Image 1 (cartoon, rainbow, N blue to C red):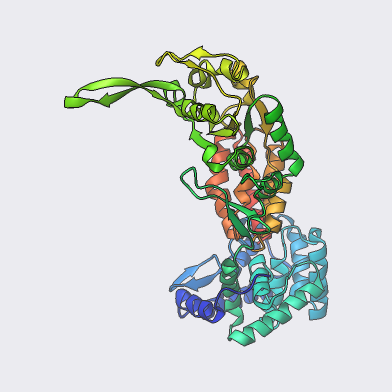
Image 2: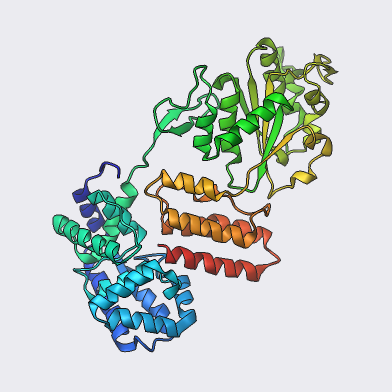
Length: 511
């Protein structure tokens, strides 16, 4: 666990001021209403009762307003609707948790944590919240935020995997509440805020300041990722990309022994630009030998190779002069330093008219240094030096690799980057505040529903967000992925509606 870098007393005071005078009382009132509904209806609840129970679980007050997001997205509509799909099972399980002897209820909770099929969708939150309602002073609500926040406070790691672990969590929670004078009703909000204060455990080494922004590489030791000549090692690139080092070596060998240009292609969110820029730091002699450009529909041969540009002369007269483009300038630099390696990274490569932008470079890229061509504007003889590597990125959701100009496609290595569960899992393990189970579960659900190899399947990097929790996951889905998929599933509205329901239910279940 990271060393505490926050003041718990200060967080408690700030949260109480933020929520207002009804912080505890509004939650206690909602809990009393939930108890009454359970006493009146448990064992014979219908689907409307189940949804209403979730609303009561989520009801509280904030800044003198009634809200229904105390545990959001947990207990929200999607998860309660899912639970209501088998009303009989819900009533049987909840009745045992609510009316059974405490020891039996704890035993059932333990079995539910070990076997989630007992009540699908209940997660760890529903059984623990029912026990909490029975005795708020003894029990706690077991969600990722409370477990992570309390773990950071007491220096332990809590998991919802059985009765013993839950009781250990509850005992630690009681001691922590006594130490800071925290009421049961406010503990979840305070621990959630503490979870957000946990720093990411990593040491960062500056990678590059040559492209207008500061990049960082996560490594286990300062400067551990730099080779003696200042390049990033293959191991450092692999570590930063959460990929096997053999993959990095394979790409580098392909570029050093064969064609000197490649395109990383795959769906959005698979880290194509990130990987390309890090690989450039492995291949280039120094960060100063890397150039970055981004293609777009208006990008032209004149921007890339050379073109006529207006210039103001003496007396305000306008004349046109030949101006070299990004690639020409890099080739000129490389020609004067033949023992060094230069890399051009082209982001969003497929957004431009590639045949028009590259022009005679399609020919010159293949015959490096051996053949020259006359450029149309300057009329100078031009060739592409052997010590220039070109790395492009291409979003397959915009355009299939097969639709690229064949003459261009056969001159570029094709390096696929697909949604990768191992990359997400490796990243999550190094970022303790992240709800790794949630991130992986939602990623798998969307990937499996859309298809592992589908060109529009969203990648892993959507979920690689520091301190990812259920609320953040729901926002990513609602504001990024759902609108994106709606563009590609416009002929399949029923499938999108079902996926939306299932994603929201899963997020709430894993809250």
